[in-house]
Length: 409
Image 1: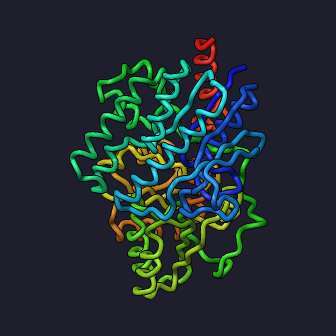
Image 2: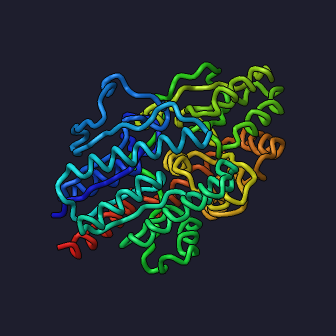
């Protein structure tokens, strides 16, 4: 079979917090008989620190879950500012390329963007070694950074755009995570639609929360729990959730639980403290394998986004965790892919983004009809069974790699 080099700055296994898409795809490639080497950073996106075992080392090669994994340095401690983020991206691009040049020639190079500099370096490596190149686009960078106001310098935007188009031109195939991303890639005018494939995130349908063993949370056993599990970062409008909780403070049976970490979490904890919210609990990030236990304690799950057109194309990984767990969803997002999924699956309620009263009313409505809420959750799982089985989606990814590998011989 083929030798596959998989490059992603962020690579999360089931023992770590975060999305496990890359881990699942690499394991599927290995099960299909491919020789897979992963090049990633040892500075995890959630913690942004250097683990003790990697201190003083720039490139470390290990075996993890049967995969050959090469972890490299990138600058830790980055924040929302452009300088520290570019340093983090740039140092990983440099050290990942050094690591890649030490490896045997791959038949297929897979790179995931963001980060864009590392993807561009991998594209150049594929060209130099005459390997086939598959680009996965998880975010339309720099478009998303510009839309969020994180990047405003015209020179930086221009350089990022040229890098983006270089990756598109070099790619033999491109995988997009959402319809909006696929449309954005094709809309760039750089690649034809025939080279772009849609492979969304999916659900692990064999992972089912055990209601007999939910996570232990500091609240009454009969509390109705509205839960968010995921990064407390720039994109999610968790301030709206706290404002909704403030409106629900006179209904003590309703509790709000926020599981995860991120650069916005300290400010959110401070906001909850200033509002003196008795009905909000923060939980530190948990490994992916522990998420089902927390969802077992949830009666309702939340997906809050900012009111920006950018998020009309959002289809986050956490929605698939919620679907697999048979939990009803409140989606507070601009009309788009996420709201259409909630409508088609009949798995919850759509409300206006950044509207605390609308969210509070929806939570109150679900709490007043727990049987109806459970029915929506079950409908969501049934929809996921038909449309978002991660095993089937991973098989489609493997088939793309197989096709490219056949052409590389």
